[in-house]
Image (cartoon, rainbow, N blue to C red; front, side, top):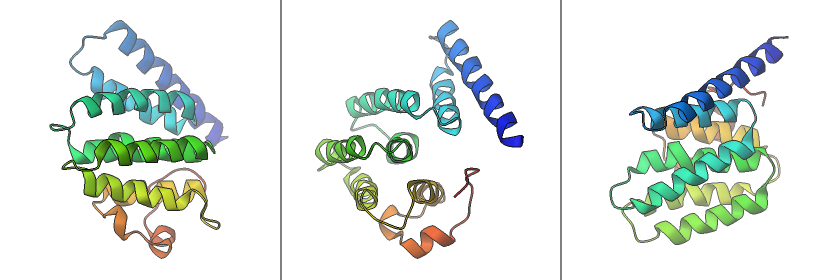
Length: 168
């Protein structure tokens, strides 16, 4: 089936990226390769491994609090990590990560946007009727499109563009 073909392709991509990163750890494009590896892991439903990479990225960004880019934090780390945790039904870990975001970023220049995203995901932890996949896909699409996470509503979530290839 096409689904099997795509999953096989994604797993081959994951293997190739892992090999490249292992063989070229000092390459100037290793950050891009790692970001692509994370995205590939997510698309291959390898959530635990993707979360492990995003945890490392989060720690690195945390060390650079003052110089980190807000959208890199949101699109490249926070939103995909929370997405992966919710997709893999690890609500306790997602709740702990949200609490950590609130603790780590309150009072920084990134606070408004990051805390808005964290709050929106927090509301979804126990919301009946909105599946994790549907919510997470649409918040990712919305954030990528520049829509503030604070303005998302269930109506917007169910009517926004579907740039996700996962069944909803």
